[in-house]
Figure 1: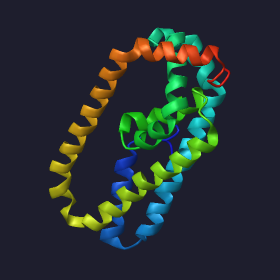
Figure 2: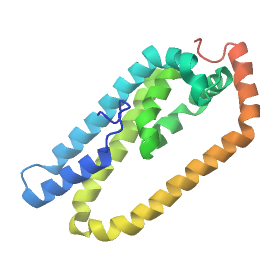
Figure 3: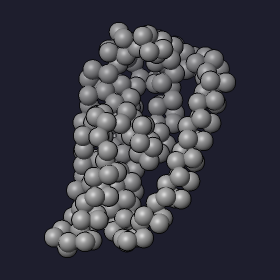
Figure 4: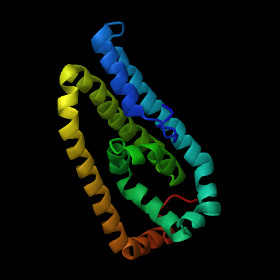
Length: 191
């Protein structure tokens, strides 16, 4: 829950530890570990969204320039969340750095809450439930699988992040122009 609210807490490690503890000791039941992980992820993201919605945009407007978030880039962020927010929220759950910030940014960029909640719940369920049950089912084999699979997933995630970054860098001007047009035409949420 804390990680989903924007605090850099190692959520995967917590889920893996609880799942392995359940497997080894049988003091917990895996379905309750999964339910707790899913609930923490979804509830934490909703708190993060509310924080971003209440204070995110004013803070980004005031201090964003210090980290390269100009007014045009903030409008671009709103544009991206307006058009692709569902995918950003769902897929962001599976990338550890994005997972910390996606709810805050969704709130700050004024993504509609019902849409955020739906894709947050789906992503949280797949991510947290998948980790809990996956680790539990793999059991002792986790160390054999996690090395190669972890490296492959890390490389794939890094490639996706680099590809997305390159795409945005290459198309930033064009996307920003589209975002500014939509902002002028009133198609983006009023800030």
